[in-house]
Image (cartoon, rainbow, N blue to C red; front, side):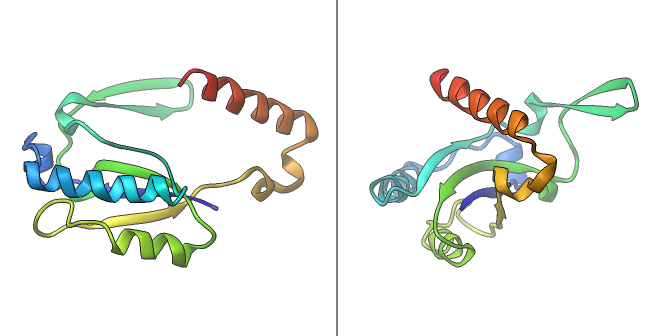
Length: 141
């Protein structure tokens, strides 16, 4: 089972405040521990929303809204993509994480859809296409 682990932003991450050297070292050890356990698939910090944009869809229309975005509690400061046996194991890994914002922080855990979750709607042809896309994307890394 794959899970997206989302670190919620706060005023400091949105202001572009960099983490301390101590926190960077702690996070490095935590990430290294997940790699050694075969759990970590990917993980990165994200730039503040002031450097981002949103694309709103309304039928065929697309509207671009430049950041910053106002509700920092709704924004993401970073993420991990992990592969574990269960939701409970994902929770246990997150509980081991160093305090990522050196104060109040919230981390959300969301299970990633797998091909089998889509049932019959994902035809054999669509499954082949999905597999081909995954392989091509992996080759781009």
